[in-house]
Length: 272
Length: 350
Image 1 (cartoon, rainbow over the protein chains, first blue to last red):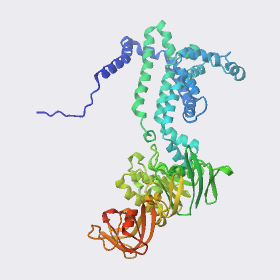
Image 2 (tube, rainbow over the protein chains, first blue to last red; image 1 turned 90 degrees about the horizontal axis):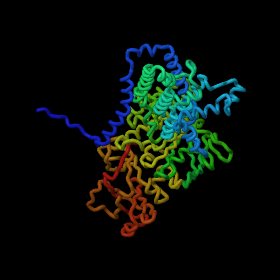
Image 3 (tube, rainbow over the protein chains, first blue to last red; image 1 turned 180 degrees about the vertical axis):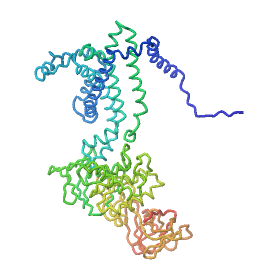
Image 4 (cartoon, chains in turn blue, brown; image 1 turned 180 degrees about the horizontal axis):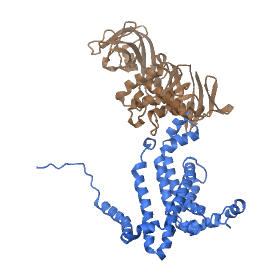
């Protein structure tokens, strides 16, 4: 006679389980569709094709730059929104995360009329500094930063609100200036959120399409990123589009899956 | 290294208005229940909360004086703080925590590390330098917090409820340990606590705080023996007897004996005035192991209760009801017997 191990059981309510499984299938099926139609024989040819490699390299460069800019400006912005109360704070917050919910094409048009050569500010950038953003690689970076920074800001702001400020007080009494305490205590305390926010912003920048094509155009080598190349290839060589899509999916999936447990630990005590 | 503070600060409806000073090398305990303003006071002295009026001075250095527009921020005050829940930085090792104050002040990494190692050795944690705060016991974390607060050589040490975060089972040990470390620190110490045992064990002087005001301050012997209000009496008014225990009997330096439930050694016995029974003549057939004959020295009425000062083998304060006083018809100079059960006496190592 074999004794069955009796462990503590907390069965899920069946309807919840079923709906969750439907949700998983909803996300999995589109990718299965891609895999199903993928021209496996020509994957290597497509990926090593110069135009695809150029677009891939451009995408990586611009999206990483955009993520870095999102951190550089987004963390101070999140700090301001979380820690300093000033009149109109809610309005400023809404403004700064608006591009998250805006159709990206609208964002691109808005960027064009403000930073374009004849735009509200763009004309001075052009006249005084000889800087033109539209239809340049920096234009791609600007468009990507515009749509991706809010992801970092809301993630980091939420974390900053939850940080136990007594640790910062303790660091001040130990002789830390405000800047030292920010670097050595506050940032480590929000590290998981900072990493998650950075990765989300980077992934959003990598997939950016609408704002980029509107503001920066579609020039191979300077502004044609992978999503633009995919869209273009869809009309001329659909099989190539599938392969490029798979490359994008693989990169994003690898990063998101790797993110979860690896870096989200650490500095738990300073968060409730 | 003395501290002089006149603090007047408002936080919403609450107002803290206190004046006190601590002589160089002394330990002052500020005792009060939650909400009496202890933590606010500590935050003012540390510089985490600017005062509205008053003046905070360490030696000759003015740290806060709104009238003269002087405010020294916390990072430039010679003040170390041990916080209630230790607040060790979780992303740093014990050694890095102790070195934090030196690093923040610009000490090179190697030198800071050496000082931190010294301090960890001093508090008996030389082997745990690489441990994360989460791996330390409550008592160990407290010692790391103490080392961290002292490593940058402050003139004043503030302790915020240093034992409140610990399990009752280890509090006694940690308290004794803390006291031996505090004795080794030459600077001035200010301790805030809600636990009278901390006051008896760790401080020289006590200031009792009630609703943002100090209602009585003085040496511990003075305040415990002569509380000037019901509030202070309830909080700290008690009998402290020091002596050496052998075979369950404490012998005072004057030769008086007290039966106590304590291990052998040098101890303080705390005899609550409410636990003492007062009788005229011999106490008839009581189970109390301690019965001391004496004479009534003074009678203090605090509302419906009465504190009797009794002179005998050692001075005692007993608390009885006004009705009991009437029934016994006591007057100063009358002979009485004060008795108390050994189990009603608490002790802590001296």
